[in-house]
Image 1: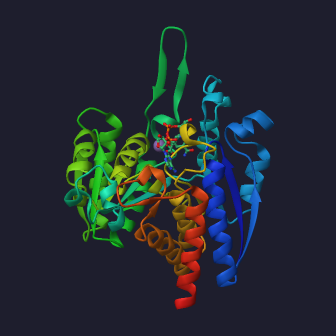
Image 2 (image 1 turned 60 degrees about the vertical axis):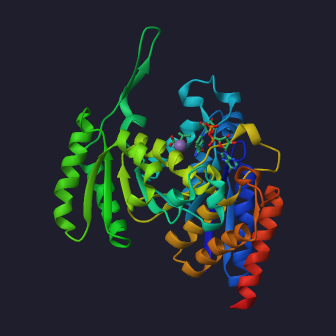
Image 3 (image 1 turned 120 degrees about the vertical axis):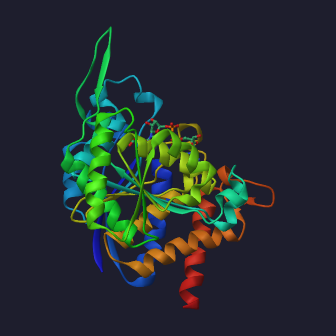
Length: 359
Ligand code: NAD
Ligand code: IPM
Ligand code: MN
């Protein structure tokens, strides 16, 4: 198979973890006889520095000419005082909007060999297997008006029925391929957008009689996510709630550095990115956990290219290295061997090789 991938490393640890994912992709391509053409482009702070634009036209064109997008992370203190249109984060929001990537899929799975790395008790974290389906192109992030002056600031939380319907339908479809339970998270006791959200879920559930539907208020969901995470199968929620709850959910896996994501358009075109950010506190030290980036690339193989065996091979290779007791420092616990980002990636590639030979 021949595919073109737009690679957008971004800022901070973005380039480190993206390079890790690229190395693993190259190893997959070689072993399985595929050709992945990699087209690098700038996004975020580095693009502000080079083009005075966090999402340059050149980058959009590279992405438009590609079959999928692989992204690292954006942001850093260097650009924190910039006006909103010249902030790295604006590049990420703009690319999501430009490509209409409304469905952000964030799987959260407890990994048996990492249970002791989680601050949660083993009996709470074990066997968790859920997916957060986060609406990604609406809500508070994009609503107008959005402005500030000396005396006040305004952000607008707006959702159309259509925007809610498409993400809710997407979540129902995912629930159908899993354990058949959908938890819709909102703040319907206070927010108008949430009342509409709940109404739409109630309407759509008639088309999915096989799915068990539950509504949960976001404050209570934040609590249940760490007291009874196995109670969730598919969670669907609006943009900002999904952002916050997914970082919270990452503690189940032991580290934010473990969570991958796919941001999808209706026709399946996708951008693949770790849930974590640019981690300025650990940038350039060769200690970042590349798992989220590698697992995001695996999601790309599965969702965008239909390469299921290859995606599984990548995931199993990461799990194999963790099972052997190797980890990056974010996952350290007694009995584990801490390795650098580079060494972790080398071990993942060796593991792939072993899997391939034993097939
Ligand atoms: P962050 O996710 O970058 O980091 C939070 C904490 O988790 C830090 O202590 C960091 O060291 C750790 N961490 C994150 N990823 C890790 C990894 N792969 N391995 C090991 N440890 C890891 O969030 P933050 O510090 O709040 O934000 C930093 C910058 O990143 C900000 O500019 C923010 O806007 C941006 N950000 C970008 C994205 C994105 O590009 N998708 C996501 C979140 C935050
Ligand atoms: C994420 C990030 C982004 C978001 C920021 C950097 C704009 O936190 O992808 O989770 O809030 O969506
Ligand atoms: Mn986030």
